[in-house]
Amino acid sequence: SQQGEEDPQALSIQEGENATMNCSYKTSINNLQWYRQNSGRGLVHLILIRSNEREKHSGRLRVTLDTSKKSSSLLITASRAADTASYFCATDPAGGATNKLIFGTGTLLAVQP
Amino acid sequence: KAGVTQTPRYLIKTRGQQVTLSCSPISGHRSVSWYQQTPGQGLQFLFEYFSETQRNKGNFPGRFSGRQFSNSRSEMNVSTLELGDSALYLCASSTRESSYNEQFFGPGTRLTVL
Image 1 (tube, one colour):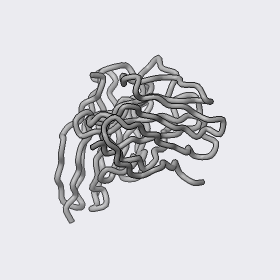
Image 2 (cartoon, chains in turn brown, yellow; image 1 turned 90 degrees about the vertical axis):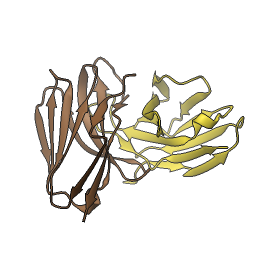
Image 3 (cartoon, helix red, strand yellow; image 1 turned 45 degrees about the vertical axis):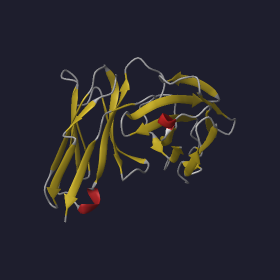
Image 4 (cartoon, chains in turn purple, orange; image 1 turned 180 degrees about the vertical axis):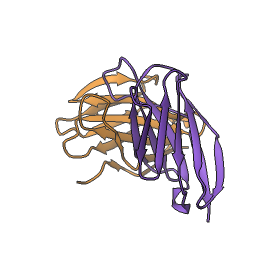
């Protein structure tokens, strides 16, 4: 399977704490994207990092990418109860000219108030 | 701008039937992709359409098909439904040919096959 792996599978933290999720993938990529999904609903795009970038910030989100290790991490700082959701990384394989994304297995984040 | 819309939101079918799901992309988006999400297999790519042409197809049987119309709206069809087809079907649209753009997902259609 081409599917990426994420860890941890589940994470429970208190409001105000930071949450870190990791993603590993298998192929060379054009970019890597992170999405959030609230309980069986649609996916919301959070951030995109290109293969030639190492770190990117967006509000309380920080994403890193290490293409030599084929891995990425998503850090959510000062978490809130509203951040409770599943988080998925998705890679755009290099060499493709389409919008196919390969998703990771996801991390279920629970932020306790 | 209105987001990606999918209809219907929920469907219940029985084995052997066929089903058609619809996706309307964000205005101006020409690429529409479809994904299947199940607890066991996660999110898997079905196919992508761009300007009415299928550009890529995932590893699904021929029972899964799709098309795109000139207004970029897309439909996917599943024939001879099986229990394992029960899933959340998501479509996503994006603006340009390159996948350097983010994809915008609809709320999904929840299909239950009995």
